[in-house]
Length: 285
Image (cartoon, rainbow, N blue to C red; front, side, top):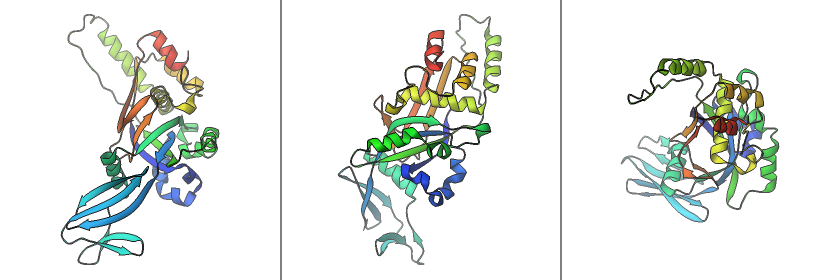
């Protein structure tokens, strides 16, 4: 399972309906959410050296520069405090903000999202999205009341998980036991295509909780990782041998990390469940 789309907003932004409106087409598909700390980013200045645009930022007391090569017809201008680029015809432009922050994160290695909580919201037939849940989320309020460290802000990462099943079959030509090959393939097909979106959301949440081991998921980390008991018990009965949840999105404006996982842009939470004890630990049976 993998995240194919995302939205990131400051935690206080969930109450700003006007600001959320342009993002709702994505938010409505996001059933997984991560709550965490990200460093504050202050824009300091923009300078043009010949055909190079340098954007200077301050993060946690350190300065970082993101550079862009410009065409010869573009020049840096200012309108009050607003910086912009202008071409010969007077047309204005500016680097894309999402790409700019992703570049800043990649170049500086200073923009990291510390995962403090992982949760999900699904509702009836996917009618509930992450924002619906977060508006009345006791843990989000608890984290906010505990206080955010100086220089950081409370941030939300909302994820859309792939909406349908995909099948990958691996054949081992050196397998010693080939007698049950056909039966195992058929069993895998039946499990795969009988897995609902609601089950995949719960599996994805469970995999991330066990992987990041977030501080505020304390109640569920060591055994059952979700409050959605019935749905994961049904998954247990399907006898999955491995659960994999991926977050591999190049455009993310930060690297995810936790006390259990080092900062990285790509994360693959893989949990092998080949024996009954592994499955009991993962599904809480």
